[in-house]
Amino acid sequence: FKSLMEMNLSGCKLLKEISDMSGTPNLKELYLDHCRNLVQVHYSIGFLNTLEFLTMDNCTSLTILPRGINLTSLKLMYLSNCTSLASLPEILGKM
Image 1: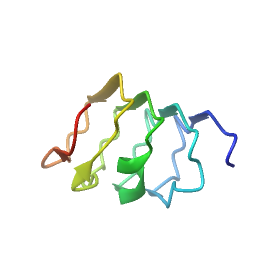
Image 2: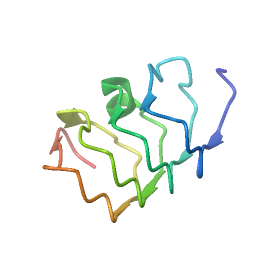
Image 3: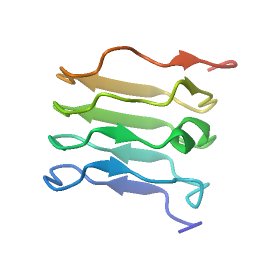
Image 4: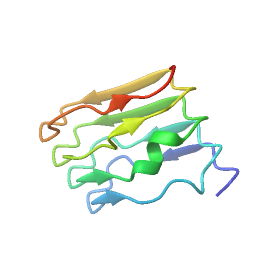
């Protein structure tokens, strides 16, 4: 999936975790809205250097985000109604 630039997994009710994303080095947009059973996101998401937009709205079971993120191209990170998320990750480097 090296040429993949946008991934929309919104509304995937059976999705429980996001696995290793290092195989998508050119990803610019990732939408994970309304994935109510999503519990955790793999740490590799924090190192997608081309990622510009990341949205996670209404992921009510999400408890774990990567400890540190280094998303140098990020323009928008939207987290809303992620009611089980205990803390936000540390931002590494310059964003």
